[in-house]
Length: 448
Length: 186
Image 1: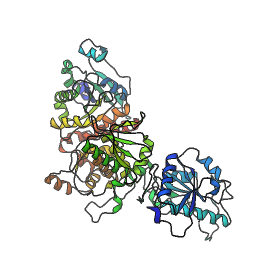
Image 2: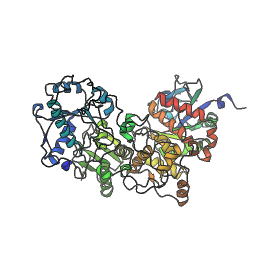
Image 3: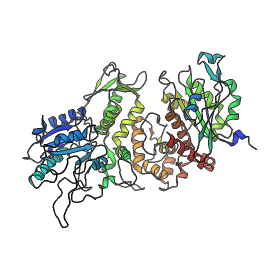
């Protein structure tokens, strides 16, 4: 965690939560209290802060920046789901991606505070420009003046991840996670960080499926750590424990210790109930929640959860929470070259769909194939298949009891088979009219 | 020579009385659906005031001017003679099951049996309606039933609200991808 991210002797950074949601404030407060005592302290007022934190996704962010106008020596660290978008709105701001990487955050706050103070000490560029829309300064040819804001480059390990609702977010840096900073003043036309430069990939896709590079078609060892996530460090791990305990005891179980409750009940119907709204559940699922953060408690009923709680089937709930935790990665221990099969379609009218999820599932319910093979057969990035795999595994839809013959068949599949090979012989007659199917599909995709 | 009806691209909507076939077609159709709803006079009257006595008909207009017909079969079994006629030449079957019926799993079995030949040459996607008012059987129960009936792989089966265009479109998309997972929206 972040407790060692600040060097001994470094001053404690006074942080003011200028524009953050109540849940973020609470969780960051917990992190300060439990882990950052020696590096960060929360300032009770703006005037006593050295750095402020701003959630760019919240309404009123411009007004928040206005409050900073009289305080040019205060550093500013912003965060957002789509840093790239906001970097255009707020050039020259450091904008971290959500979810935040709390391991790196204290040092980033310290750096922002230090840089801001240093910038003011030198002839100030920021002071002369409006805070909300500072004009990029003109750099004279040959100037070697260093940039005045921290520059995030693909090579520099930087923050990502936030947790809108995680008491403690441990560091698990998604190398491709959206972290960006405005173009440095010395290079206003600089390309965006490599982590954002994946062709036509949309911001949503990056948020939900990451941007991992594909693995080779043939098994490689060791596999890179970055393709895996440890479910025990996320909400999905807590949910799984609650589910297991509810299964073994026959009683509902709650996940306590979170800002709101989540309950699992298996009888008479297998459901999850939560007071979290959808827009809270997603960042919470993406955040790292060490096991000590929450605890599983038995309950006679789920009446602890308010009448406004949302009820999900456990399968749908687990699918979504796992997808958000996975972000295009596989659960630890998964062999991406091992053939498996989906035993059924998920309930796609209710669950999150990663790109190509319908195609992936349609193929995988009838074919024993590894995640790598499925991606190759459909000609799609592996991260989309990994997302479906992770969700399906926690939703209980993975069948790993492969017949020996199927293993051989799947392992020998040509990595770049044309997509039409995905269809079994029974479908061949249907492929005589692919155009009408494609056109209907396009109609539905465009219309819905 | 095939009949005019058989030569059209068409998707068949079938299922139990009150499952929402007419509603689903109305949700998806680009035209006001042609319906043959009439006041129910038999045991159906206990379930709903009107029912489809012949068929429902809607249209998906494709961008190139081509049309896809959406045919809804009448739910009552006494009209089952029409099912084969309507489904002739169809792309696939969207089957809707009313979960609030007394024995929806038996309904599922009955309809899958009735459309067995059609499904074997095309595909089926199943929507379970009214799950908000009747939680059981759940989707896992349906999957178990489908496996028991020898449907391997298990067809797509979703919880749907027949009034929701998104839900109905999802069923049709699943049907299309079942026919060809390599399909792209070209």
